[in-house]
Image (cartoon, rainbow, N blue to C red; front, side, top):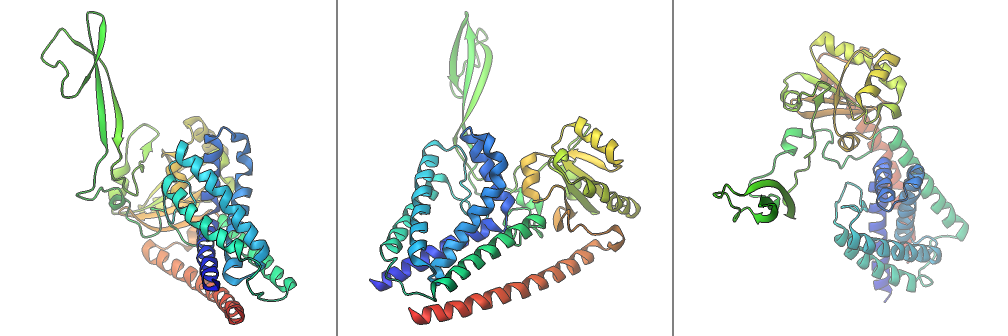
Length: 407
């Protein structure tokens, strides 16, 4: 049975690490999901705590997972894993029955599961947690208790640090459909052969003061004594939803310029500010220089927001903003980039680069060839991340080697 216990520990630990990491590198995504839950359950007053809870939950999952993988403090870790899975199994069962939100967010944007799929997944994880809990006193110690606790604290600090870094910059890995390199128009296409939404439409006709319901196949189309009053459509079968299905850009005058922007041969900068009153004002003002650079070089520059027009005009006056504003859905803007504001560079509808407001380039550093500029900048960023990642992996591999040698 020792083999079963080790396999259960490794499987459970790996899934906890994956779940904690993919959410931990996108703390705002988890924050938005907490707010969705608070709204659905009528406890919106807890929304101000969402970001803190997101950081703590993601770090807790990651720490439990790493502790399972490395065999740290197994008596405590066994209890933590079991309590964690009992709570979330019950919660996801309630979510599956009531469906207040369509996606539980248990794996962030890396893997989207329905509420029932999440519940079945949690049943499996709960079984693993029960096995780990049963054998918690029989696992070998990796090091002395003080050293093990030191590793646990160190792992927690690293995960919280990664989350804070991603909050102040951008997620290390972008699982959303608006990642760098994504072709937005292509992401809006429904592939041939994919099922489409099916609706049942009910028609209401009136005759002699009596309103009667009809289907689309039996309504009295040839009887002029019946007068149409209303119709109602209900979704009976969900079809395929493309990764990008809600992207649109509308001018303040009400003109839809989505296709024009996505088909443009010119570079286009999109300043994404989902709510202006919550945006970083120095960044909104600083980006005026980039807007001026675009005007000089014949490129497009738009600020996309969901704020009402009065709020836009107020911000334009307060900060002397001279660039164009357009409307886009708030959820879409939050999905495009985890920054308020954030900067996105497009060419023919393809995302070339994205910047958090803490990392937006200076206008004087931009070159006329923005594609080349973006490639060089991202290469330098990836090199730095690769070195740090390899160092971290090396430390964990060495630790794991010594731990498993003692099992």
